[in-house]
Length: 569
Ligand code: ATP
Ligand code: MG
Image (cartoon, rainbow, N blue to C red; front, top):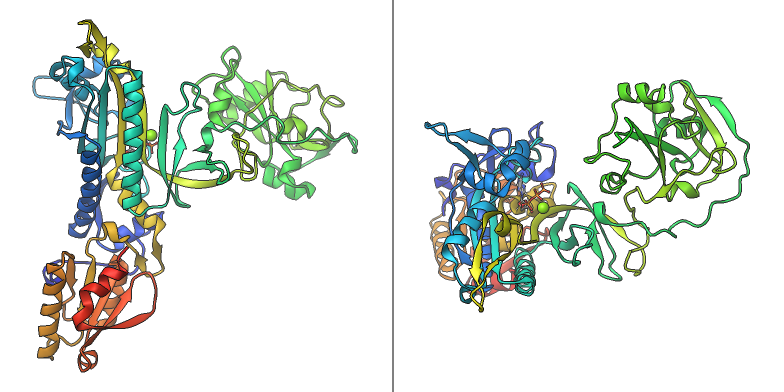
C-alpha cells in the first residue's frame, strides 16, 4: 500500500487525557480515535492490527476443534431472566427496550445465548464434545472506562463455550483451551503468565487468567519462578509463619500530640519511623455491627477478598466514610487505633507480630508510640487480611514471590452446570436419560491485546509492534522519489518482490522530508524499515533498519527477501 493513499495523521505530543502509554501512542499513531467515553473507532492501521490478532486466534481455535458461530449483540431479557442474571448483573448491563416495549440488553458476554443454542442444537451425548466460539463486539457499561481500549465500554472479544457430558469431559475441554491460549499468546509474541484466578478451593484449576506483564496493568499478580506458582494477588494466602515471633517490648507506652498527622506517611515523617513500625486501623461495615476494625501494618495493603470472608464483615466490603467513622468511633480516621476501641477488631497476622509500634490514640491529633500487644492492649483475633508482597514466601514452598503488574488478556473458566441447570440444557446419555451439560467459557480481549502489546513494547519514538501483529511488515522509504527515476523504479520493484513473498508492505511515497517520514515510521511501529536512495543504488544496495535497534545495515538488492526472512521473528 502507498502511504499517499492512506490519510495518516500523526501527532508529536501525547493528548492530555491519555494516562497510559498505549493509549497515548494509539492516538498519536492514528490507530484509534475516541468517539465518547469508552467508545473508540479503529482507523485503517488499527483494523489491520485487529485482523492479524483475530487471524491467529481463529487459526488456533480451529486447530483446537472449536466451531465458529456468530451471535447477535442485542439479546432478549427473557434469556437473562432464565439464568437469573437480569437481576444479578448490575449496572454494567446496558438495558434497552424496543418499540414494543420489550426488554433487551447489549450483550456483555454470551453464556445465555449459547446455552439457548446448545439446548436446541444438541440432543445426544453422541454430539459431544462441542466448543462454539465467536469473535464479536461486547458492551459493558464499565463504571470507569479508562486506559483507552484497554478498559472500554464497547470492545471485541473472542468468546468460546464448551459443552460436555460430564466433569471429565469439561476438564479435557478446559485443558485443550489452556493449550490453545498458550499457543495464541506465544504466537502473538507477548510475555505473559497464566495465573490462578480463584483460590483453587474447588478443584484447583477452575479458573485461570492470562496476564501480559506490564507496569500499567490493573491487576497485581504474584509468581515464583522457582516453583511455577502464579496467581492474582487477590487470591494468594500469606503463610502463617511469614514473620517470626513478636519481639519483646523495649519501649514504654507513650501518648504524643501529633498535630496535622492524617496518614501513615505523615506519621512516619513526624515520628521518624518506618511504615512497618506503624499500624493502621481501617473501619468497614459489619454484618452485626455498624463498624468492624481491621488492623494492618502501615506498609501492607488490605486484601478485600480475605476481609469480606470474615463472618463479622459485610460482603461486599464497604469502607466507612469519614463521617461514619466519626459516628462509630468518635474520632476521625487518621487518629484511630486499637487501644480502648469499643468495636469488633481483627488484626492481620503480620501486624500481630510487630512490637513497639505506633498507632492512633482514638483522640483527635494524638498517637501512641511504643505499643505492645498483650502488655498494652489484648491481642484481637488474628487473620490473614493483607495482600502478599514481593519477598513473601510462595504458598507452594518454592522460595520468594515476585509481585508484578499484569493486564488480563484472557480468561478460562469452568462453569459446570450453572447455566444448563438454570436453562434446562440437557442431552440424552447412553442410557437415554437427560443430563445437564457441563460448560466451560473462554474469553480473549482482542482489542485489549492490541493495547497490551504496545504497553509491552514501545520506546520514546513510538510503538514497536511484534512482527506477528504489526499493521505492515515492512515500510519502504524512497529518498527524493520525484527526482530519481532509478529510485522510483527500484521502489516499485522492491515492493512487488516483497509482496510476492507474502509480506505486507507500506511505501511512504509522500512528498515529505526524510526526517519526518522516519519519525512517522518509528511512531507507527513498523518492525522493518528499508530506505532506497541514489547513493546505495550505485552499489545495488539499500539500507535496512530494525525498529528494535538503531544499527543500519546495507543489503544487496538481490538478497532482500532472504535477508528480511532472517530478520523476522
Ligand atoms: P476485568 O477483570 O478486566 O474487568 P473481566 O474478568 O470482566 O475483565 P471477562 O469477563 O473474563 O473479563 O472477559 C474476557 C476478556 O475480555 C478479559 O480477559 C479481557 O481481556 C477482555 N475485557 C473484559 N472487559 C473489557 C473491557 N472493558 N475492555 C476491553 N477488554 C475487556
Ligand atoms: Mg476475568
